[in-house]
Image (cartoon, rainbow, N blue to C red; front, side):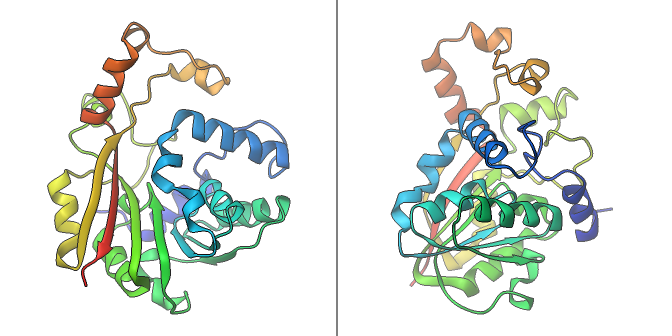
Length: 259
């Protein structure tokens, strides 16, 4: 039986994504600085994919803003930022982050499958979602909502988990799990062809790439040490990059509405 949206909400309320990336006082500037540093160190491709600097003066909607690590960067570069989030606990931290850095943003709590139930109807130049849509019971409903809110010349960027990936093979072997905390209710994975089907005939995909294999030993990582697994430590950087591009856990999708 598929988990429902209440299960998903309870899971992320119990431990917001990345909330343990710092041991500094929760919601302090030092805390948020460390969370961001760790996030972008482990997932540096977020910056190149998101292109934060391109959205100055543009309306940006983030579906699943979490702690607003991406959101605060859109705002820093001058975007008119709106974040929506299912988890109340995550959303409160996102709001606090904007207060700490004295940035402007709009925030809404709710289920992205039903955006129009709580989000005022307007068009966005960028709709962005990083690692979120695959956690909701009905991803196709989120895509339908994106269509309603995306400017006719706007851009839709999302990251989804890849089924034919190093990490998913490890999950299948019982050696890994989708999220840091155990028991994630829903974590769909996709092939590139399934993503094309998910977006349907209303979108044209302008870019779809792979990235990200987590190479570090979990124990030291939790203590702030970046020590690679032995098999990755001995692998040349060029070989590891090829592996990420072929078997990466993240599928990075950029799409536009068909005119």
